[in-house]
Length: 333
Image (tube, rainbow, N blue to C red; front, side, top):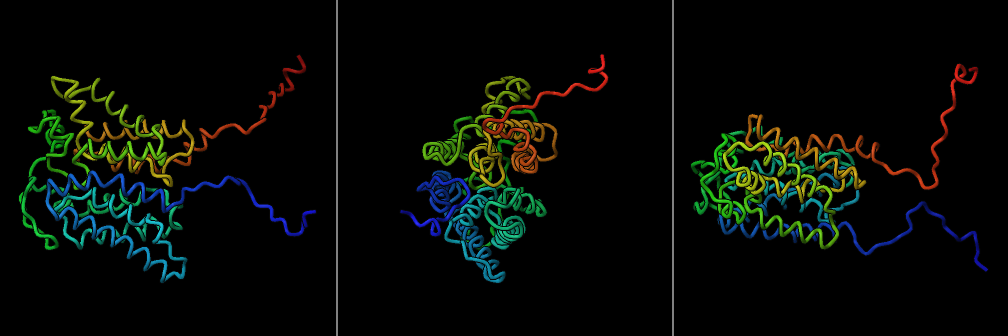
């Protein structure tokens, strides 16, 4: 017979799965590599340098904070590496290294660790750091032309060129073709320029079941629908495709809006979250001061996740809604 004194009863769930945080983060890193390869081809080796410094900075700040606070060291889960890569992807390739490290410190210490670490932050660390780094507007809006020779570590002295979103902001189609924007042969942030590379990474995450299709499809579908119905040019289809392929839309839809910690857990909630991100993105792109709205739209929707989860949580199994009791006046009649 079993000795009941040695039986340990724990709370549910009891299902075990081979996936771990480290494995999930490794899949995300793999899915981000096509975009990095395109960035290196377009911007040169400095794109790799900025990305590596950002990833190393995030790992270093997480280790240092946990060491000083005497907390368990968790840098081997690779979540800090993912944050560093995503932050680098949101920056111009000409960004100075000191600014990259400031962004790393803000993302890891302020947004992630001060709220309790992985899984407890309510906003996306990489996007929060990008919004914080907009305190340096000149640096953050300097876009070197493609194939510009730049030093690996020193701050380059470059001339800013126009991005496709800058042209779309004025209601005109950019000089670059849709093919150029899809392949990444345009200027912009390090990891945002190639829509096809990011789409390939998103498909990899979907095939590995790291993310679901609900949020990306709702996000991209909302942007596509609105920009097609309300184009700012003569050709609605071309304008819509240009909006989908430019800026950080693909990066945000597949890699930022699907963050486990800062997105809804229910399927209905994920659809609502994606639609909200799409509405805000188009609104900011059309009426905001800056040409891009992906970062701020996701951050705003991050703050509504608690409410979305509360409104869309499924009914408990076996729950029967109680009958409404008649008022005393009605009963008297």
